[in-house]
Image 1 (cartoon, helix red, strand yellow):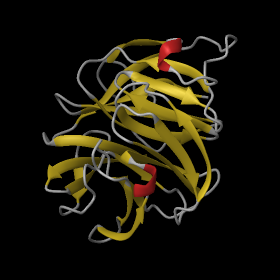
Image 2 (cartoon, one colour):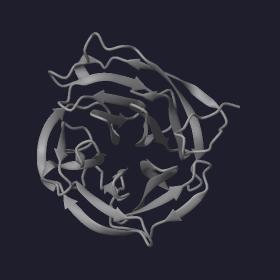
Image 3 (cartoon, rainbow, N blue to C red):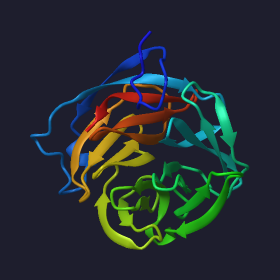
Length: 270
């Protein structure tokens, strides 16, 4: 039995440490010119520990975390998605009705008000971010259209700047644009990035961008320079990335399907 070292608001002890992931340098051919990882970046290793098996067996996609609860997006077809809330032991607390959130490719929570930001995702779907009020009966209160940026949308709340980070491109193979925006969708700055793998998740840890593709978390600064890549020795398809504040860093969670499950990365990311 191994304790899963989650944030202090999660009273949890879980089963098994699932393996180590060494931080590996990205292949130069996979990165865009000018975004190569600095040679001096320190090697770090992480353990990925199972937090819970997701009890629902649908098409799991996005992942978010706040205040001891996990929010998981599911694509249910027909342009609809469902968001479900779970405790860290896997108990389902709440779920939405089918909402017009498309693929529900990524979910992120704004700390200031608890609103969920849900990206459409999908290589042929124009990028939209749907703002979901989770109090009472979950409902979409606003939709921000980022279709001009492309398809394959992901979103992360940028709490440090009280804005958003939006990922989009012509399809799932890129090339991609990452756009920092305000909460109304007005673009503040952008950077480009070549293909690192199929887009699966996005979050901010302070001023660092965490970009999740299959079995890899690519870490970038706000200008798009690749700082490191964290490889994950797990099986299945990567689905959704979440963070929680942990001192000067973040606790990082990753989702996988076949079967649906959530892991915690330890130690905390800084």
